[in-house]
Image 1 (cartoon, rainbow, N blue to C red):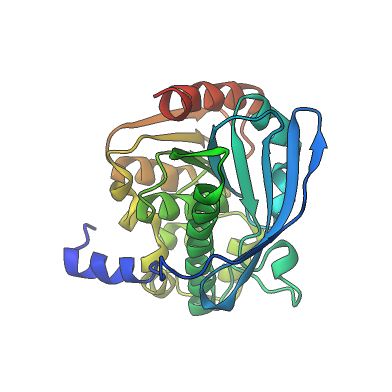
Image 2 (cartoon, helix red, strand yellow):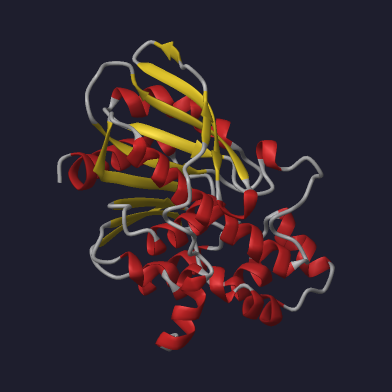
Length: 287
């Protein structure tokens, strides 16, 4: 279904915040590990949210392109620490945040994908705004080239990353791994334990889709264009069902590239990583 512009504008209002809101943060001095310097930090975001994050940058002086990382369901900001030396070694800085109800932001064990659709929607909206604040942070750093900021998100991070790239024009290029759109299909067919739990509790997928419409990537993904996007998807994915990935790719504008792997939700990273780094070099590092 194609949204009318009045409805779309109403959805986009959910993602706005005061761009001149004072930028407050707490950041550690930094720990250098080989060619990588890591900082722990806390970003002040909209709605009085304090967002834990990790910032990695090349140890050598210079100005670099940078990436915003969004982790998957059940993950946290630390998931990207293993690839931080790889990213900084390739000449990028990067910030990874704890999404709402994840990592240090979930002291009460809340779930971002539950039978409480309004709460889930608000948590997803908050995470996208937090991602925009992460872009604010990157633009404040002298070692970051403000014209070369990209995004990398996987699974839930790919779903929310689609929304972030759509509403945040300062993101120049986006990589979306095992992402999908259409909340009705996700609720009806996902084999993730959360999806199974929704069906066990007889949640109506059509009602859930209506509530979640402002955070359905299908409704906003075309706004990423004309900025480039790379999709990495699994033909046998039943967590974020492959059908939802196809729909998301179809709804996206140009330029876009998509690689389908003969895999499930777990992509063959020995193939994905070189592909992503090559694509980023062409579309973000040396466009």
